[in-house]
Amino acid sequence: MTLVVPAGLVYPCPLCHWPMRVAQHAATVEVRCEAHAPRGVHYRRTASPAGAGPPELVGTGKKATPVQGLPASTEHLALARPVWRYGVLPTLMELHLRNEVADLPHVTVEMWPGELRPDEYDLHITVAVPGRRTQHFRADAKAWESVVALGDALMEREPPRCPLTIVLPDHQDRERHYLAARLRGRLITVTTLSRLVKRIKTASGAPQ
Image (cartoon, rainbow, N blue to C red):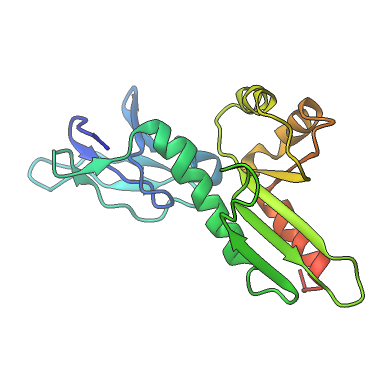
């Protein structure tokens, strides 16, 4: 873990709890999560009169729920950026996916099964409707900032031994076609979190 000691206050993202970026543009101070700003986690910081306490955040996005600023000190720690980006964010996506589908009829979810190469995928979702072919979704969530860099990294891996589903954040929906084309011929399907949830609900016969 590394210390996060910017000047003033640290504002944790309400979704991933990592310190949000604070940037000043002329007289306006913007606060936003680098990962979740596309989902509406961004704010404007107001100026407070002298002696009136710390400045408050005014939400400017649909997911901008109230956030309490924390003093920037050695008492507050945060994960190093690579751990947050490549560990925390995809894990949050995988937990969200599990929570969305685990209670659906005919659906079973296994987290981090590790039946093939380590870390090849993190969820094995099985849809077994009586009288129909059983469907398997081996999902690996990716929260890379650059889909181009993600494609390059995946091309450096050995191809998966069985069909694999790469799950992107919803705000990268328009980029899934590029990644799918980049990985063509490698037994890999590319989708987004919401699209995969909808597909599993359809396969299980659950109402949308």
